[in-house]
Length: 322
Image (cartoon, rainbow, N blue to C red; front, side, top):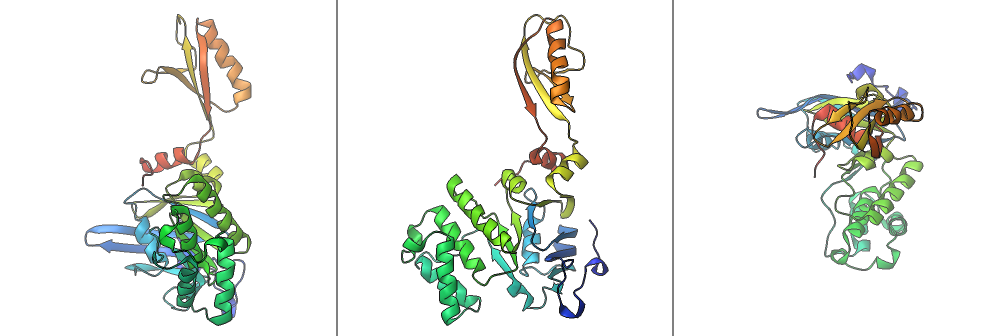
């Protein structure tokens, strides 16, 4: 997607409109010596949207994330929050950033950590007390408020970490791998927390190596590789525009097959037949009948629906890894 400064809806007289993007990344370029980390990266986060940002290691994602929150200055291009450049220091107060590495103090209690980060965000006295009380309830740690965080589980630390980044009620929230190293129950709790924020109007950018998180917990997906956006859209759009919507049917069969069944390919590596269908209910009976006619006995079959994993491999040729 190619954006220009003229294509970003600007709020008239400083007033926001529904068309003003929560976040607009416009033609970012960044090099480290001979390594071109970003090469004209552009995309938009709409107000109230949950966007998953995906990319294999070395794709430029880390540089992109740091550019979005003002920690790296790109060689060219700009980032806008709610129609204003992040070069304006006051604008960055509208963003909350949750880093992948835990950014809490192990020798402080949960409450003390929240008070510390709340003050860094400009909260004072009664407002600070109210927001800390809200955060402890929101993350489900009211009864552990006065315990040192070094004794917390990984999931509890993650929840405190997230709360520290949203005490100031940011309009845009950037989360870098928020569920790394946590158990399934903690993952669910974290996403319940994020859903609550989103329902209250927070726009969210989520980076993750868990494709199931991106597929089920976002409204739209942006995939980057080699410093560029290689695809973006809803999961249905990405599937249809890259690999198509046909289902893959794999069948294991035994018996003395006198010939290969018509319309089926033999996967010698895995010892099974493979075919692709548009409508499983309509086409599968005929496929099974063809196998039987050549002497085959069906032992097992599997229908695979195209998913984000297939799209990612098709576009990047790489697996997502930690």
